[in-house]
Length: 345
Image 1: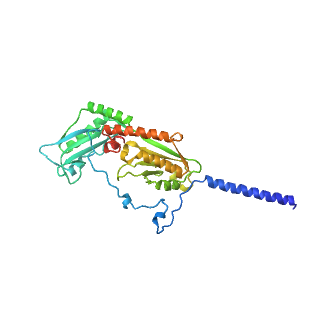
Image 2 (image 1 turned 180 degrees about the vertical axis):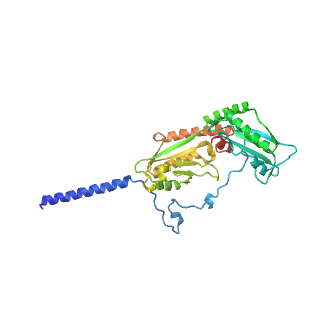
Image 3 (image 1 turned 45 degrees about the vertical axis):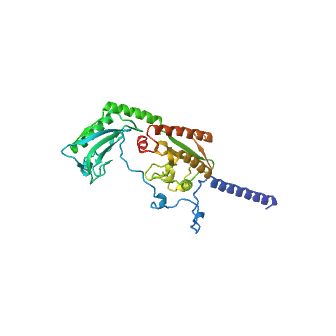
């Protein structure tokens, strides 16, 4: 073999090796980023890298206060009918009241509820077995995100209430339907004009993300896995309240046979303004979370149309939210309150 042939063979080998190396590098660069393995426990717990770990729900971190119990009905957003007992029957047992309840707790798309006046505790409450009640009231919600209470729903409410009253030998007294339906339309108009749900999108600049990689980075910011695949939530300060923020990504990627190979290029952050107490500073936390995730995962924060969100735009949204919070409070429907959570649902 001549020197020329040997030289060409060597050169060809070098080129081939370069092509293979470049292909491997490109493949690794385009592969979804994976969650990093957790470090082995050490004596110095402060040096441990936070990540996805199993947490006992009974640990102090999850021992959150519960929201105070209170009657479900409120005349501000409910039609309320009083149900007077027969004078010959001064009290009705909770067991009898439960047996008389309708099979469903809705009138059309509106929640329907019954409360009894507990003779022992002297408070209105949902009837419970073993208690005695001196009177009842039945309510139906005036409006929710399905719209205003209409004539058909009001009629269904009357039928359900009358059946309950007949079963316990009592007499209901209903407000005028025309007045209540008009009140429902007015409340629905106000709610529709003040219902804010905010969403940010975080898009990958370069390499895509695996579900595990997203989980690990979100967990560092306080998010926990939700009940739905591809969903994580930032819990509220009190147990039982709606989450402060919801993080979502492709549920099909989370359900894949090998999620580590799922390539995710965007995730969303969602804030349901009326559901979260103002004191939680939800938008401030949403903004900080979006920026922190974008920085850690090499992404960019955009709106739903893929346009980057500038700090000035964020400031404008924050200012508008303060006006919205004030308006809701002036109407006695403060964000995060039981009334607001029911109305905006």
